[in-house]
Image (tube, rainbow, N blue to C red):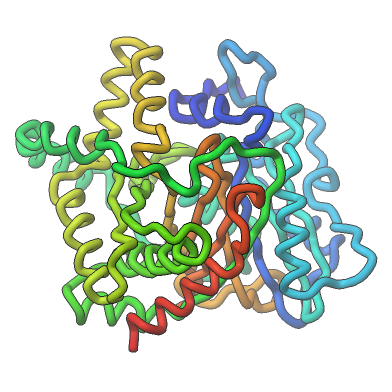
Length: 416
């Protein structure tokens, strides 16, 4: 295989890594009775690796022009290991293990992923770290389908075909030009107040999980105002943030969040292909239904005007003029006054999945925080359950599990 140069988006993600930012994502796969042992897991993944050759790629070491090359010394034993704990862990212990692993850097001289098999009181958990430069959320789910889930596993939501995406893009090109002023106002607006998550982050991390039934939340969102599941996710996250801010800061207002949008299409081989838009979550609204309606109106406008596609096109064209100009635009948009928290939602397998015959009970995703963005929320679905994963700097965001528990409470209120 010839060296494959990293695309602009991959290089930007790689450059984010620094003294306090590790740069990877994490999937936590909780397995029930009959969890595989280390040898069986290694053998299974090694056998299926030809379906995902990207997992054998490493960086060529050239910082000026980074590229992917095949690791000639690839060894599955270096990438799939045992956590080597003194005893199996409970739920709280698992979050501690995940936090400590999440703080560790992936070895850049090897392919940028690692699995730890963690013994738990009721089975085992696979803690799978993947560098964001190697895979975004949609790509990571494809990797899991191809090397981890048993073959009969269902897949996530289908992505649009390339021809359909091109046709839709052409039809909306003129309308997007007309709405450019509104897009700039929405996406580059400044928050009126400083975010409570705006601070100089360190190297320590704290992790919290929550799980919510998917169907009741989807049905409640549709029944109340024709909202989407993602609207409901943003609404319950807003409710959880409201509870946490009231308890720890007392002052309420709004918090602008970044919402990643996948631009992958069928047959797309890109490792990272997503964009985003930003919305303001109304923390001063106590009623969950009214909050949902506000969120729905915010996201509907951005979807109708294709703000995520416009942002992607804007950055691409700026990059064609000058890579430095593109980077400047990213830095401006990434200010903590432009957005405070990143809230992603990625569709996972629709049907129950197994790993070497053992049922997967829970699936959670964790994404890295950023400088002056000390909190991040990642959501992934699996077989009718939404798994919420919270990652934060404990020096800035204390009592993170209470925030995660707030998601469960807000979902119950909305569905009631």
